Image 1 (spheres, one colour):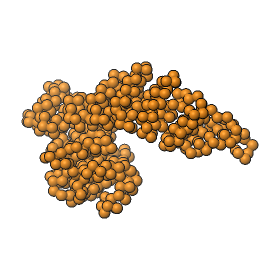
Image 2 (tube, rainbow, N blue to C red):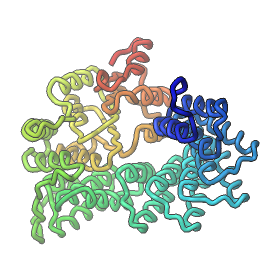
Image 3 (spheres, rainbow, N blue to C red):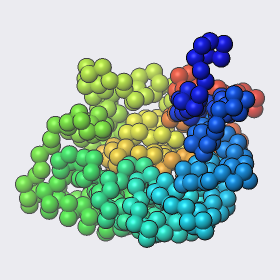
Length: 485
């Protein structure tokens, strides 16, 4: 264009900078903005905001703030879009104080605030672990007649979760429900993580029931949620509460082999005869985002022998081969050769070792490890609450509630909480680690575990998916320390 006949004007530059903004090409956007001045093409706040936005979206938040400050010094009229872009840049750069300062400047200058303004400011407070300020901005947003959306609530919930304020996260959950917002699984994950950590089993039961109602179909999904909650009560030694919860479920006509096994573990040895008509198991609709996993759970409950970890694992293997392979779906169950490698690796750990698993999914690998080495104790963490419910049911059906613990939460937030645990007065450490989630993040998890001293010096480490998800940093770190995975 520069050497041709097409004239460079505001339209061509606007289109080019907008393209850079959408693709996050901040360096090219700044180059074009500088070129405009050389070509004596008039610039205004629209172009400057587009260039700022390109910097913000491209991760160059410092450049975005530099441009904002330049606009302020140049007496350019700063509008809502300009401030929103600057506050979003503050969020990216963990500059929560600057974000709140800009929010105050907007109020002083009578610049109109909108939902984006408040959401960006709350996000900045969340990144800065400022839960009180995040709640203050959220309440101010509501008072300004702006309805917070799920993204805004998510930032506020995460801020409170980082501040270990579980009652605040629970109150925010009720606010979302009151606003008729569909709470996503990630939100349940944060709230359940907090409630599990502080041991409020009553609220945990209610939340798990909500999860079962939202993403399950038929009576079995509801029963599975109850069983998952009851398993936590049993682990905490609250047998009477667990028994009452299960008996109430049976009276409602909802039952399963896992529920029967759980009830027996609570000291109720009579086989249940339902007083109400049992709810029939329904064929899972493939439109359900969890149809694969819920169908797997239903198949295993129908076909596996209760009390046997290997029977449950074999049932999961059979379903994967019969159903998922037939439908050309990838099986995330680490069976066959992978499971043998895992089992042999865990056998090589010291007797009575504690195992940490990152990425439970439906519980298959945790059960394979427990079956291979009956003396071990396994703590498995899973971010998706629906998968947590399914995994806990598989653990209950295997009769291994006291050996396998499934916790809810993302490893980034949950691992630091494990460092506060004590066993017989001693600091908790794990002698074996199995990582089975997105491999490119293994390095972060490993660094966290080492920093918190959660791993024994002779820890056995097994990691899946290292070739396909780019876990090169973990492999390099282990090799440099003389380890292997």
